Length: 73
Ligand code: SF4
Image 1 (tube, rainbow, N blue to C red):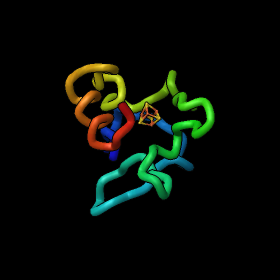
Image 2 (cartoon, helix red, strand yellow):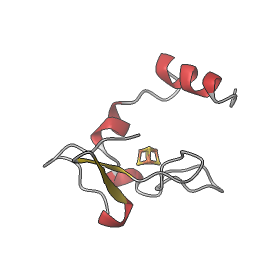
Image 3 (cartoon, protein in one colour):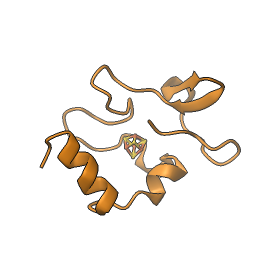
Image 4 (tube, helix red, strand yellow):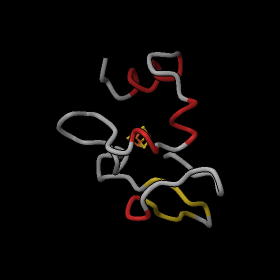
């Protein structure tokens, strides 16, 4: 789940949900981020994606561990 940083992240409110007082990106039933296009697998708000997403290294160690856990590699 992607937590949003107050005063930094400016994503459409329709994609935001609050958990225990923390603003986060909403998730679909399968756990995917609500902003992820299920067909193209691309971020629909890429230019305005949260800082957490900007910091995430695509193909990096954490990325590979998550993909392995979800059997996507
Ligand atoms: S990059 Fe886009 S689709 Fe991926 S988690 Fe961040 S906001 Fe969601």
